[in-house]
Length: 192
Length: 192
Image (cartoon, rainbow over all chains, first blue to last red):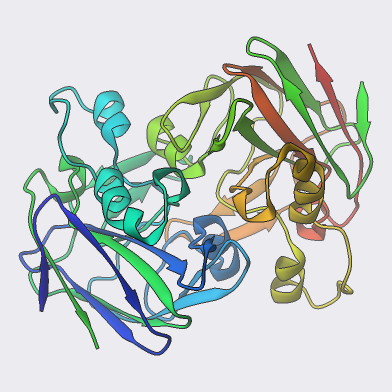
């Protein structure tokens, strides 16, 4: 298993038919996943298309991740925890400034980690879409109020996704304290 | 009042401090709003940042519309109906093919109308983000199931927004039957 160190990220390509397994090694950690068509990076994950076509806010096994062009990019084959988020954009320096009182400037963020790792693929920070936030536990009330709670995932929980196109993948071990109960941890991934 | 004809769209620029009033002329119609920084179109409305920083799925008066860079682009000053959506991407030919049985090919869509009207501003179809869907009535259950219901808006209901930056604005009279109870209608707008 490959390890994404705490508060960091990685980017790589996978081929159509490859399977990507993302594992919460220690439990209660979040991994932000963004995907782009490897042959045309202007086609990217769209949270808005995914929720529309899957008719759900909560995306789990048997759901697809859709692109801004209305194509299926990945299928979720297995999800041992079953709670993920696709509402909220990756944490960023602005997230820390606006939503937290106690994070010093210059701390790593998912958006920063995705941008740094996707830059060699010609993808800019502005082009990074709202992510599929694996293991992220965002609760919502009937009147729409959102809260970011500690993940329900335990050590060894994983999500297995199949690539339906050749893809550029960005993946993080999340840097936002609210997303992981305040304890930053590693994330594992394998390409099968 | 300017009129957006049924199943069409428009794009224009407004200045920081301008107010944009979007009116449901006949009732039960939806208007998709997308916004870009007029001085750098790579900065655009982000549904994911807006829901994150407003801590809500339901965006109404006193909420802000935020950009992918974590800046406030607009403030919602008034909202006489009070139900809007920011979950779902603009309807597109793919929406009609995937979600409907009875829409012939070649019908107008919000994505198509936004793309055609934003193209003179140098904004491509792929760059159009998930919209702020004014008057759109998307209901969600506790377990995340989504349904697109007829708007609760009545003739004369409006949303008044203040521009916090110089903006390029795209705006539609929605083309998706589910969003407007199957009766396509006009939308009115004024720049105040």
